[in-house]
Length: 169
Image (tube, rainbow, N blue to C red; front, side, top):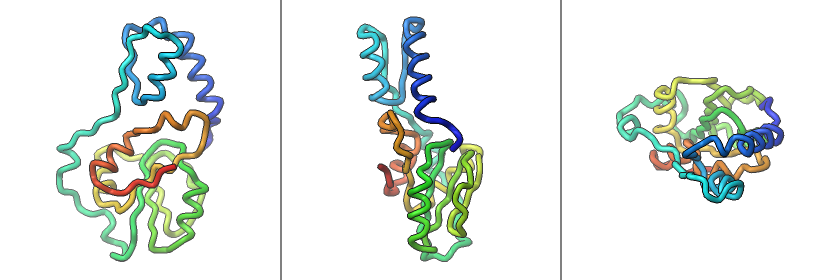
């Protein structure tokens, strides 16, 4: 990823401190963000709203996008816009050619291997077949300051709903 996550996080937190008094209600997707903002201003009106999904979309039947692979293959899925741990991807993809890594999102093709497939960005609904037919979900995030705010990302919710194991730090 081309972002400087530490600097970006620090810049965002400074901006939050500057503008926090301008809001009547703040909604966050993470308990850790809520807790941090409460330290800035105790009497703030703040609520944690974890990500949710449209269950009807995930309960529909979708053709299996992995049928072109050998049935012995194990399909790992990562859907997201950043913070993919490329070191993990490098090590895990080296373990077996039967481990196929499907990476969906606007991410760099930093590691080229025949068992790593980068799809680029997709419409949300197009990702659902990859999620529902995957064997393992990846929440492998690089270890950066404040990574704990990703305790319940949309990935976590999606993977849990389709009942696949999650690899996470």
